[in-house]
Length: 493
Image (cartoon, rainbow, N blue to C red; front, side, top):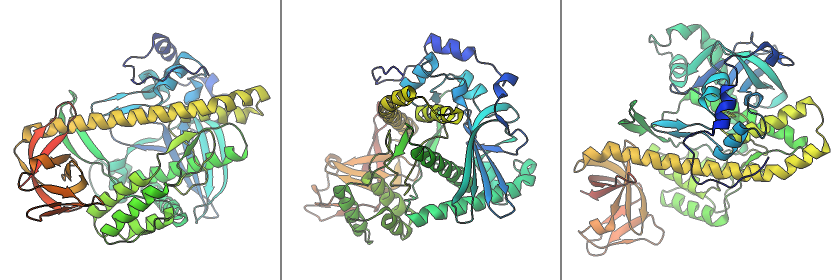
């Protein structure tokens, strides 16, 4: 692959050559495309995604074997069949690195003809896939697995809320057509429990942190802001993808082929010490030399959801940033010795890259020249993928902040109850129940002169001795919304 200069911006339009290649792809899978593939169109499988999702990367199947093992199939869109290496589409995908999901639009990694069309695992349509089928025992160990190209046909396009309603035995019109599927989803739930417990037992860190959400209308106007709802249905898919990604990474590590791993290294000592100080402030204990298992034990002891949110964010801040690497460095947060990203090739370039390596390896031994080329390329591909991921995260956060500011703009002079989520040398951060967060600047606290304590967990007024602590509930008034950033200024009432 020819490596170009990194772009600090995301192009709004695709290059003409990439569009021509996308438009030249078929609308349906052709008979010739199915040659040499396992035909899994008779296997029952579903996709489970958010209601608004249009680029469906992954489908799951599940069978209970005679020995009681679970045969989990994770079937991923075979994007590389349509996006050839070094093509205009591939170069565009490499530069973009990832799809970017903004509140009012998606900036896709691939043109919609592919991302929402022939590559998306739309129910009732023949689709090309790369399948990973794993036999998993009742302790969560993968006893055997197979990776192979396939042709599939998804039976149902399910959403998280419908699956959750089914599992919760809720009665409404939306779930009535799917009542017969309850045993299938109950089996998926049982496997989810097994896989999750295995991860926790080995020391994975599972944080009770929810992301904020912004709901907009078709014109991009903000209807509401709040918190993302996590439930059993989202966890089912998460655990299925995690075990698949681990299985793929371990196999290719032992094959000693060039690869792209998802790496997460252990926190540095200084950040762990800071985390132990925060934890002690809230009445818990954590050694500055804590392992990931020690951190999870501490999280399990937290008394309230607000504590879980605040401490969980400090745990995140103490962690190293996960990144893509050409060497296997393990994944601290997952307590996984091997990990990669395999399951989202429509929207992530590293997944697309390793699909190519996997398919090449399935066709037979690679030539020495090919191995040398990949070994030379993977460090650059990994660095570019990490860069574009960070760029996307920053862009998504900025867009969410601006939209939250738009939502709060007509609420200036209104009062709200909130929780102190951070204290700095310039002021106090307060988070509202609707997920909006703003700053109470010390310059606006004219009742006293406030000083930050040395550890940053509280501040105290010099004259009156009033103390504000991390996690305290406070009443605030919104006094300003910064339109260009969405930042909010509060005063304490």
